[in-house]
Amino acid sequence: MKDAVKLFSIVNTLLVALVVFHIAFYFIASPILSDRLPIDTVIRDISEEEEKAESQLKKEWIEHMHQAAPGADWKSIEFDNRWKKYQFKLTALKKGGRGNKFVSVASGALTGEWIEKGSRNLSGRIHVADMDTATNMIYCGSSGGNIWKGNMDGTGWTSLNDNLQMSSIKMVDVLHHSNGVRLLVADGGDNFFFSDDDGTTWDTASGLAAVQDWGYIMRALVVNNAAHTIYLLCQQWDYVEWGATTCIYRSDDLGASFNEVQCFFSGTYG
Image 1 (cartoon, one colour):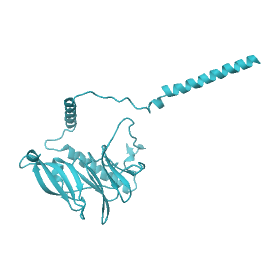
Image 2 (image 1 turned 90 degrees about the horizontal axis):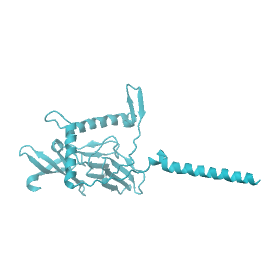
Image 3 (image 1 turned 180 degrees about the vertical axis):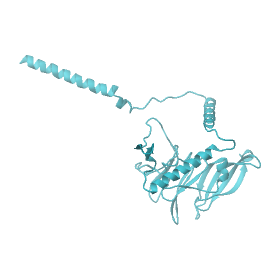
Image 4 (image 1 turned 90 degrees about the vertical axis):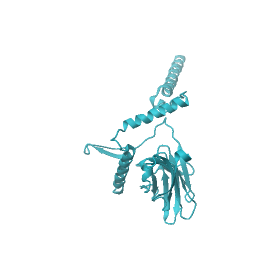
């Protein structure tokens, strides 16, 4: 009887040790868990001059990647291509298609539905935001070029422009007017976007050809008046006097079109 108890005790001890070993191995060596752990933060100790030099090298590298014919603006060409692609996807969605998540290549021999997943070790930030007081919904413009909509409690976040990136967003405004609601977005590039169906479809404002030729939008605001006047502060190029100018644009049709109001030479007025 004593030998049986002794044997049971030994076996029980071995089983406990084996369980502990497996648990420890799982938490220490399991690739599934380790993949979920954040990577170490790397802080680079470089001077401001070195950072500027690296930034300049990056710009030169990007320019070198986009070699084009003399006089061709590759940035405008890329935007036109993206806009045509967006219109194509939009047409497919209206016809009942699945948009950009469904991919078919090799004449249909290979198909797949893709679901985007964010990276676990990349951070992001919000540039601008607006709250629709009529619905208590929040609209944000992110650094990645997306317009996000969510609830006040931080739930239900949805991207409203997965098929169309908006760079360096400067303004997001939910504008209630007599005929409905218009979502306004000024990006830091050279486009002013608006949507009348909460981001399902987007359009661009007219009248900004000079800014789109050479320049960008610096700031935007909506005046709290009956007409909901919109002003843009932009930089563009004066090809007659040959110099950069800072210009004010105005819209009286809820951002569908803009007219130039006044320009000042940047070299003179800053």
